[in-house]
Image 1 (cartoon, each protein chain N blue to C red):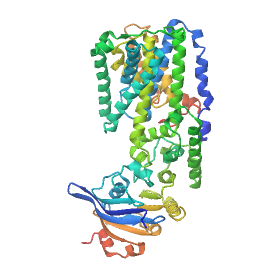
Image 2 (image 1 turned 180 degrees about the horizontal axis):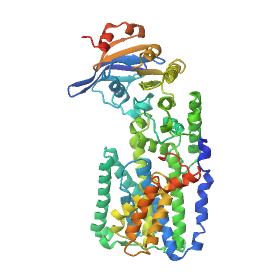
Image 3 (image 1 turned 60 degrees about the horizontal axis):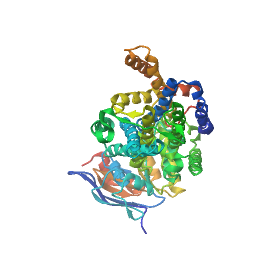
Image 4 (image 1 turned 135 degrees about the horizontal axis):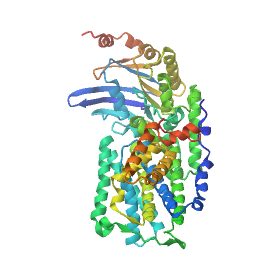
Length: 254
Length: 322
């Protein structure tokens, strides 16, 4: 059986510098895998290499068995691998609703000519997309915010809307880059709830970069620990908690 | 405080009210004012096309005047060399402008952005002007190319009133098409590229395709404006498509409101009328024009469209920056 995501000996080398070196792991549907490690460990490089923003120099990335390592970000996304961004990826001038509808772009019917002439198919597709976006916002209790520009949301709300936008197209695989950074304890708990719901109820495979240890330990099925671009440990939260190499990497013992 | 989007935007029929009311304009004009109003319709399209690229797509591309010239010369050359009636040169001018838009988008796709894109597209415009001046056999050189206006269905095309109704129809259709485009998923994607191109790609959207779409539509709209301009003035000159034209077009976009359709109309109307008023002060026209533009932008940095938005929420358009 092929895994949802298979990362095989993946490496990103820039003229001698190994930003990412020989990383392998797999991820199944409904599984949450956290990637942790000190700053500069190569976590975001790993995300960028998987999602097409950085071209890997070594190894392969397979999505349901199909190689995606050298595809462009938009075609990887169109195949069902979607991600969020560490610094927030919302479109500030668009409303919350429009942001979520942008996540539905590929599912919204209507070709250029139908759109230009305002034909019924295109208008109906717009209404359907808007209705679906509102439904998703309501599910996350964000429907009150639907018509305000995304720039007016708080940091926590922006993270939640970004996740709604990212999952709107129901991708089987989700990459979340520090979704809880800068969130209040309440928003953090809400975020954990969302992650658990997506993997548990919707069967989404989730790859998660996170610094908040309690969130990682509670939400992740498996953890990948990285340092200096390499994988230094892998296992269940319980295994990682007691791993000597991990403690050394974090505490700086030689 | 925040009403649902459906009630914030104007109902569809309101859009058609303005052109229907405009049908009566020739009853109240003399040949001079009719000529100016016809120019307003042309510049509405020029401004709109420009605004889609610099306002909505957020690319600092100044190839707009080049598209305008390409459309005007395409129309005049097709009329002269091929003997086509003016009306048939209109789609040709649109396609020629769209081809110009495609070329300009190629620069943006090659990663030429911001100031670099500005200078590359300015150079494109100057190159076209050089071509009009030096390809005398085709373009008539510095003397320009005269148009044999002819007639359609027995209506004399050199009549300003006939021109008005044709221009009103073309402008209304192209503005409607642009509104439809901007309100669709493509319009959202165009703004998304401006706001965060990397995140746009992460949603499965081929951003390069979106950039090409915006440029090509811009070129198409402005190219048709070029054909209208050729008919309007009866003769196309290289000098009509130089930097002065570009600066005035740019001012129209900003005075109206960057990325706003209503703004494009208002900016074009205001800055087409303004020179006629400052003409009362011979020798001082440019100074008056410049000072008025500066004052408007200082008082209303979001342009005239922001004034309307303050009056009523029905003038609210999606995707503008406020």
